[in-house]
Image 1 (cartoon, rainbow, N blue to C red):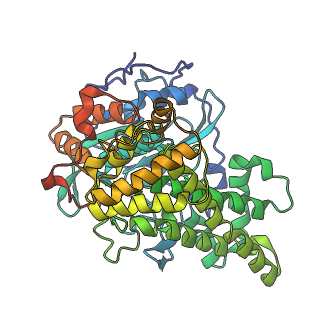
Image 2: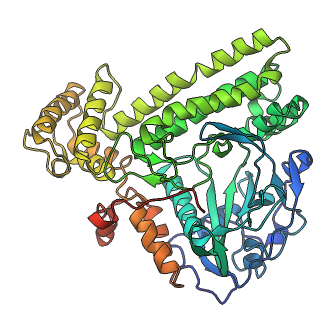
Image 3: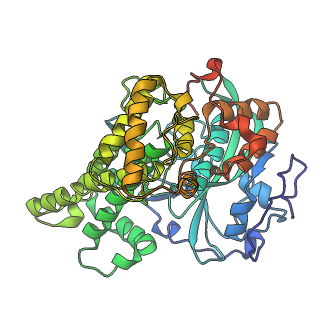
Length: 513
């Protein structure tokens, strides 16, 4: 397997590389639809060169999907911002947003640049974006850099979420530099190359709506529909039908977050993808000990974005998007308001359906029946009461048997109130038997395909960060391999499935990145 030509630490070859026709950068087909929007949506801006770039990790599987030849001599320079993508002028996007519920009228890509739009060998259009490539007109006085600490977290988590089957932006590369960057402490710089079909966010529509520039809404909406919702392009009510899909995608995404115990941390409207992708990994966290009110971001002093608040915040963010789209829905304000209300009301049932179905899958149930919501709710209450490990508890549920009333070993060790759990377990077994769901081995296999063995726990990410800061990138590579197969039993990696030691249970993550 060819490697990026550089003297830095190299990535290890993949165990299996997707068969693709790989091409050097200049031979990849460009498709600059987004850049074609130009002003007032985008501003051309060149990246700031990154001194002494070191390749921390390169995602060869994703490169194969994109059709990129990893032996291209120019690749490291392009991915560090030291050389432009051939025949493409990088751009930064303008947007606004509600941050922690407060309106902020001017935001934008303050440290991110779209550096290319290409067609993959499969014919899919994707955008590549450098995060941490220096200041833009939207940096608001900041340095436009990202630090190695937060860049490792985003790089690992975006690929971990992809492997879990959760819609997300992805990462192609992670490049580090000794360049100092001041945050809460003095850190060092890094650049991540992010990949997605689109990085358009709710806040881009909010920006033009609140400025009264309503004529700018339709071109942006039409771009999104043409590229990502083409089945709606010729419909007279395309904007309403499109927003219905956006709201339902958003509801589905958050249901998926909830059922893997993922907390985003900064659910501002400018961090919400118009495609329903997980976007902008900052102070996120997969819960260890389950707490309904868990807050992963220590900068979130009021707990606005806590675990149990995420579904409602998602709905509130959708309401902000819908408000911004009122001018597109009807010239009659009352009619537009009625359309928005009808679309808004699709969120709750869409979320409930998706969440209940996914919780049922995690319990190995073949179908959703009356009473299942109560069964699931009581299990979550037991986990909350005992601060039980979320990931381990659900993984161990596959050990419950219907051919025996013996105590459920494995999961029982995670529970504090054993009497209450045993009563719940008896009801759970009765529920399984009621649908003739008594092939324990088959059910366990199904459950282990939806209840991950491994997630990116904060202490695991921190261990990789600590090593990388000394120049040892091996733990980043190890976690990438591990998290690419989160559902597999891997006895040699068992320690990565363990709950964190007591001294690492309360690692605090902030918005500083």
